[in-house]
Length: 220
Ligand code: DX5
Ligand code: ZN
Image (cartoon, rainbow, N blue to C red; front, top):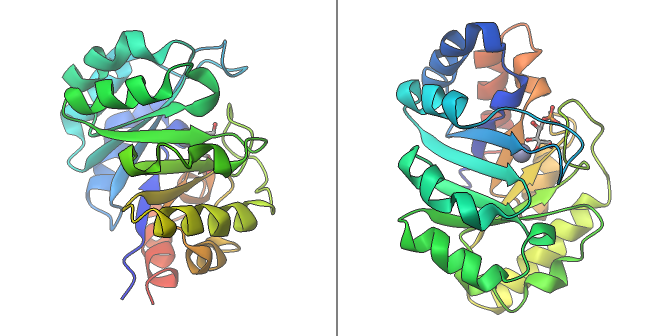
């Protein structure tokens, strides 16, 4: 049976009640905390930085999946390891020496992820796929929660899945942006392993039930 991992995106949490929202995720069927770090340069928005991440990891009891939307991610790899990141994902569009960056992330004891913008072809991952633990396929343009899902993503998932299988890699495919009950099942059928959900979870009347619903819908 497929066990799809659900990763609520903390960007959509209520920052005035951050501990409450973290406990909600702890007590739900969610698998990962998805944490978006934005620098206002790589993306046109600034989210939060080290002190907030430190506060999150102090309470979070599940995998900490950090999605860096920043330029020069190499200079912060050690810091994110010290702050408790389990997975560290960098954007392919932000890395000149991607292979080196992946090695540096692993050397700090973290799982290495690559995020891919909607305009980037997944064939660019062919030569590094065996070194990648997670590919985060952006199904919106990064920078904001609550945007509409880009339909082209289904084809990208299938294409990426084919590359992973052909190379004998065990890379997970994560989908980030606009995920809801409208697209979750179809994404998993295409090959997705991890679903990030921000607004769909945190704007719901009952976030715990919404997470459980996503989990049920994608476990078959
Ligand atoms: C977008 C972020 C996403 C975002 C997802 O730049 O990387 O993780 O929080 O939020 P929703 O699910 O609301 O699109
Ligand atoms: Zn993200």
